[in-house]
Amino acid sequence: MCRIEAIPNEASPLAEQARALFRLYYEFLQATKSCGTHLPKLDDEITTLPTAYSGNGGDVLLALVDDQPAACIAYRATRDSQTCDIKRLFVHPDYRGHRLSHALVTDVLARAKARNFARAILDTDTITMPAAHALYLALGFKEYRRQDNLTYLELDLTLPDR
Image (cartoon, rainbow, N blue to C red):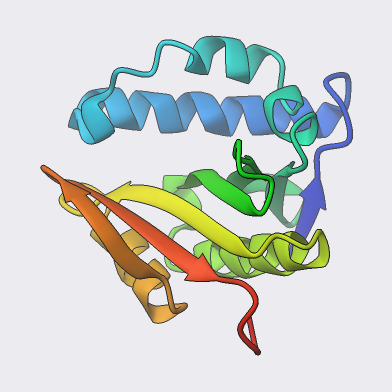
């Protein structure tokens, strides 16, 4: 059984579980040389989870399967307070194939819409993360820019059924 929890603060036991998944995500990015792998602030971000997101109008969400940390995602407001930036979608390899990515992205979109964001943006590496890219397209995201393997996508949250 899967449940999705927002990380309430840095001291929460859920925060430590999310940190472990964020570290695995970072190791994946380094191993695949995905998204340029130049993520100098990620170490600080991991250490202070969920502050970089919850302090900016968003959340870090953790998917738990039978109370075990299985996947994570985060979102936050951009400089344009009408837009949220979705980041760090990662599913632990042991839990892939269980639609956790779909559940997390859908949950983020519902939360973003409830917080009156008009638009969601994200980026993904189409070579090393083809399943994520396909998921975003299936959920209605549209590509608006490409740079090498990196694709930038957006979704209008003001449309019905988003």
